[in-house]
Amino acid sequence: MKNSLKIIIGLFAIISMSCNRSSDSEKKENYAQKNYNKQEATITMRDGIKLFVSIYSPKDVSKTYPILLQRTPYSCAPYGKTEFRKHIGPNETMMKEGYIIVYEDVRGRWMSEGTYDNMRPYIPNKKDQSQIDESSDTYDTIDWLVKNVANNNGKVGTWGISYPGFYTSYSTLDAHPALKAASPQAPIGDFFFDDFHHNGAFLLSYFRAIGLFGAPKNMPTDTAWYKLPEFNTKDQYQFFLEAGPISNLNKYYESKTLDNTSKLNETSVKDFFWQEIINHPNYDENWQKKSLVGHLKNDSSKVATMVVGGWYDAEDLYGTFETYKHFESNRSRPYNTIVVGPWSHGGWAREPGKQSVGNVYFGDSISTFFQKNIETKFFHHFLKEKGDAVSGLPEAYVFDTGAKVWQQYAVWPPKNAVQQTYYLKANQELSPIAPTKNAKPLVFVSDLTKPVPYSEDIKVVFTPRKYMTDDQRFAARRPDVLVYQTPVLERDMILTGDILAKLQVATTGTDADWIVKVIDVFPPDAEENEAMQDHLKMSNYFMLLRSEVMRGKFRNSFSNPQPMVKNQKTEITIHLQDVYHTLKEGHRLQIQIQSTWFPLIDLNPQTFVENIYKANASDFKTQTHSVYQDSEIIFNVMQ
Image (cartoon, rainbow, N blue to C red; front, top):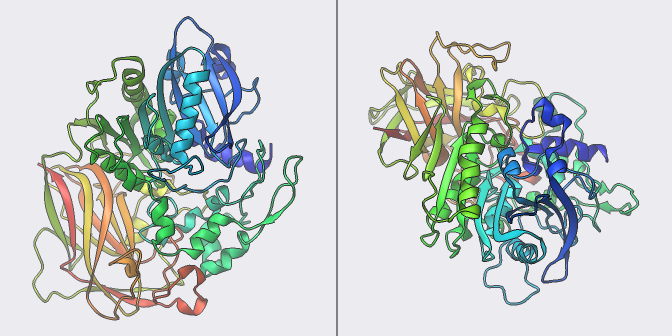
């Protein structure tokens, strides 16, 4: 198998395979191969296109089993009837309990025929057999499976992490009657707010990942046909800084040469996903029609759903909460729950033993607890038991990342929370007391030749994750980062639900990025942990809790950007995703404000341009920004 495929399988192991870490004894013995039979098949869709599936069925045929289906763009590998995955299904407990596990290469990927469409739009009220989407492909797949796979009990569940999570959400639209349970886990919801964009800002740190999705293929293949760009450096910050405007990066995706294999002809092609990004800088019809979350609230699906995510998911935090919220707003849905734990992207699908994200340790065997007591219980109830609304699970199973304990709630966010507003005042003060009417703003210079790093690590990452809990002291010590914090807390303060920032700002330019970071400042005597990087200490650690960016030109509309007016006070509203964190007595609550976050996001020229992907070097200018003291940060705090 080609090197690029090995890289992808390694990086996306938790996405495409969702496997747990195995013990030494299990590594020697492949449980799936010993206890399951494997078959491979192609299923004909309503328009004649054939999709490839790998089917793992228990060797014990004395009883019937539910079917668990994962649809993926990341490959059903390993291919071949005698080649087995070491772990199958959502978790090890379920693998040993017995399910029929099916993996499917989605249309246009790997061994499936057809044309791939990145985030294929949903088509409601289809008129004929030629109108297909992921919903119809899922329906046709399930229909074939329940009719052709022996020993199935007629009930089907779907699950998947990240992009497979998107396909899982999709499966609930116009669902097959046999589909009884779906668990979208870290699902993509909308590509203008997930993964590659945040509120109009391009996640430059995901630049290499674009290569996964934008190279077309001309026939089914079990070999990687795409290539990822190589930077030839270990310093990502310096690479992108020296590269200059994004238009200088076109050469990495402008044309590609497909691998010359026995199944693929050598062909010069353009990366269609990169072209899509640079040609659609705004939230136009292209992105709007690909958004899935809005459709979830309108469907009449009766499928039970359990949305799963991690508080420190750098890829699809938006998708997790928006998927749950839109499912929840659908009154016809009989069962919908959410589970959020102290994980980065997909971390619940593997068990490291000691659960840490970056430098912060949260406890032991947290993933195992989820797999055995939550995930397994959900699927068992709806696929092997009565499947009524009384599942024994709460509406919300959430991990308090400060107190480091699980909590259960009947609704999310919890009802017993009240809003508290804090103001960004002078002398680095974060205060619940409003400033005086004519309080002067704090001012800083945003120099694009020296942007604020998102992490002090020197590395090249495929997709960033660790920064979500990183120590922010390095940023707080820069003159282009404003810092505000409370006095030492005299009692615990529990933040829950979403966070809203209403910044009152001005700039000498006509555009700017506005970045808000919410931080837990640890006391001087905080205990150390084994996860800590050698050059850091937990003493006075500035733990990032939540962060988000808003590109100024999108302040009124993501579809119709407008320049900011020079030196005019302007409101910038930023919605930060949900949080559940106890700031303990003796800690401080801190806010940092900045205008560069590099190279997590691309550099804003700080002068208005119609298309940032086609901006010239002369468009990028240093500007002076002002943040007024009546800016508000609104929290939901547990009573």
